[in-house]
Image (tube, rainbow, N blue to C red; front, top):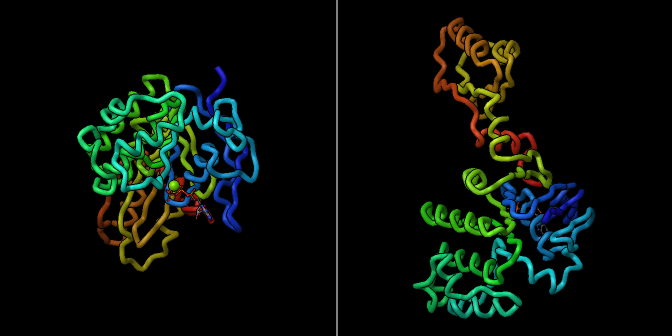
Length: 307
Ligand SMILES: Nc1ncnc2c1ncn2[C@@H]1O[C@H](COP(=O)(O)OP(=O)(O)OP(=O)(O)O)[C@@H](O)[C@H]1O
Ligand SMILES: [Mg+2]
């Protein structure tokens, strides 16, 4: 089975900003692929190039065997798209919007079925502008489903959802893939990526800085232990504390964070050092690294958003 998506060395610039800076990945049919990253990482730019909504500067893209920049109608008929901000006419009712959008597709699902799937049946005849932010987002989700696509792009599908609605929408996405659909989603939420995705690409500054199954990212995470404390007010150089460590130390706002494969030795050094100076280590904690730490570490290493 050929992959649903193949992206090779994709680039997109806006002036001096390398929004997408040499990104490669592939997504298998029936897979859920999550692109996780902070604001400005290049997630929407990447996804919108795959959707055919933006032109790339360089690289090769194949989606369902088609180059989306040349895809045209035949292509749009096979993909469902949930944009980060969709420009729908909010004076229309939910049912009217779905009916209008469904006309673009040759296959369409019954409107009632889609309304049920996104839990908006009782709002079918309400004007979109009267819905809450999370409910409006569910309309966007419905628009992505209405054409019964083989592949669905979801750009931050659950932003603005309350926690319960977020969980229910996860079930919805899981049902889609149980039906054999391929899903590409972007998210800021680690938990969402972990819950939904078969594979996760962590994006920062226009590049993929890590990629793998949630388990493999977690396994990487488990290799380290984090020791944190406030650097005490002592008349001693920082190097005296840091240099002998096995692990890597970093500091921010006088908080020291040591990520180490040798927590016993490093903790002994740190506490011995503190005792030697007669100071208490305020806020001392020792914990295993979680996926959040890995993600934040990767993004921090990269200097955050695109530059
Ligand atoms: N149309 C545009 N014109 C100029 N710069 C743009 C344009 N679209 C995106 N950019 C820049 O490209 C970079 C990536 O933006 P993008 O929207 O892809 O990020 P993102 O990962 O989707 O962020 P968010 O999580 O905030 O949605 C940013 O620095 C952004 O300012
Ligand atoms: Mg975005």
